[in-house]
Length: 171
View 1 (cartoon, rainbow, N blue to C red):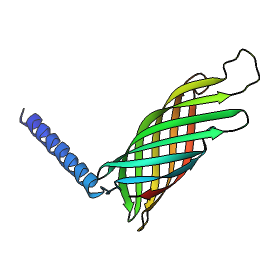
View 2 (view 1 turned 90 degrees about the horizontal axis):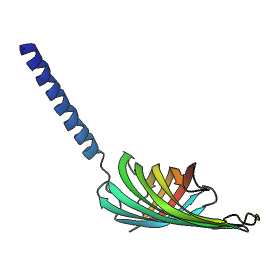
View 3 (view 1 turned 90 degrees about the vertical axis):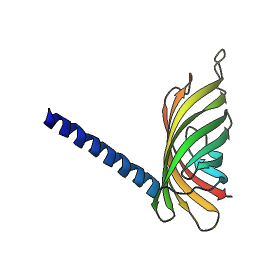
């Protein structure tokens, strides 16, 4: 019985130590993100090229990111709205890395030249986000990220991977 008590006590100490250590690491790596940043994100995911992008800080290392992208071509027009919640950590100096999750809505309109077929679709999607960014001494932020997206629609019912380069003005 005494051995069992000591094992339980040691386990509690270990869990407490790991919890305090994890909390210390998170606060030591906390990065102050800019209150606001607006700019462009250049990506390529099924024709949804350029995105107008806005970031809003919530806390020292958390932010929201919103974007709208559109595409127009001979037989295809589309737009997509996205919202993401992100966590930001310092890598080294002005380099940060971040992860996030969110989702959005989009609409496709295309001409497939087949009578009787529905040529448009509104769809929903879930997205993740992982990336790195460099915060210059001036109010310029460059980022490179990867967004896995899971579509829930008739035509957009698959997995897509969107890589993008972001250029934002911070204020």
